[in-house]
Length: 569
Ligand code: PEP
Ligand code: MG
Image 1 (tube, rainbow, N blue to C red):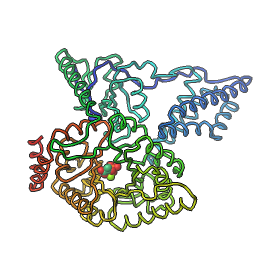
Image 2 (image 1 turned 135 degrees about the horizontal axis):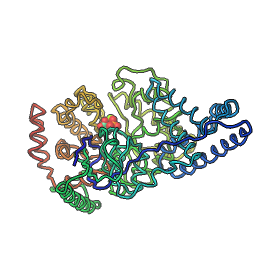
Image 3 (image 1 turned 45 degrees about the horizontal axis):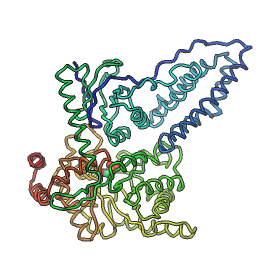
């Protein structure tokens, strides 16, 4: 028996046999051709292009619901249609008498090396697109490694180097029980999707591909972020019990789907879900969430050669609004650092991207792009269940400016006789201390406020949320953070509006009673954790939450707050 440690990405236990998922190496046997074979080889080239493009078209249709995957596959088709690529392969066959397979191998090896060695990480990552295309063409031509996932049996635990968001969805579709990866992170899109699908996932397990063999007995402990190879009988029996308990617990949770998120003394909390990708709506609906409290729209804007237009965005927002109707959908306008969009928007490299051109600052600096998004949301909101939320608001002036832009967008649509939500509700994210401190004035300008604790903690405590070396300084229960939340709640209520929390704190059981006690009215959580949080809310009393929060606010030091919260847990 051997324990291999990784990082916890998605909770859950899995017991099963390991399935190693990696692409097999393809063997290219014939290197040279004779002059009389040139035409035949060129015809094979054309046939293979047609065949692989047809395959990609089918996949693009299969992924109609996932923009990310469709975009990736469309990029792959463009690589196959690139005139330079076609000319180069033709020359290698005609002039150097290389076999088609050898010509493709030589061409792609050079291109992949070129991209891999680029300093800009965006371009370096692009090398994997060329690897994908080369693999597709060569596996078709050599008839090797056609579907390396076909051997994946239901109930297997996948061991892989890395996993893409579409990979998580494919593994889920094949009934795998869990994922173990040699690399990856907690905050990746793949991680978020695994959590929303309740698929246990442990990442960054060093040397896992060298240590585990296909068919090995494995236990995956997603709570601890570790796997156990060849478990002994005592460990197996321990995990069998844990699995039974977990299954029973999930079944019990399902019975809560139709029940309200109300405390034992009758205080109602609206419990909503955060989504990153449209495909997560299914899970949101399955758990009967009371709406989408945060739809991060960044996925539409990243990894693209050009920005999505108004219509493309409208179709996506409209579909989600219809799926969720009559529950509310809060669409957040783009919130990416300028560094991520710099290629498309021509933004200079920034030394401190988190303090630079981020969120609303990008939108206000690129009004036509911002207006496209606003108009798309306004059009999708005709049935009145859509709201707009603005990220990274630091001052009231920004909200006033944004409201004027929304009014202009309404007028533009009216002028074209296009239906839209003329009185759409607008809200600001409170994630910069200035917004919390100034929340009375902000609340007066808004229909709702939502605290992004992930950033509020980062900016209040001056600690980079993604920097592992300062992890210990990232303290959600810091008295300063708690005071800002209480202040925002009081100011929202004085102005007759609701205060939500959509940051990770809302998905963490330890903090939920505290947030409720601080005066938070709505929580927006990871879809996979919604029922767990609902169960917790139904088990606590509002009076006790208030007492807990009041007491926590009196403590001067975050250590004592934590100790106190744990004692009450
Ligand atoms: C937050 O900051 O808490 C938040 C919800 O926004 P994001 O995590 O997308 O920055
Ligand atoms: Mg944020």
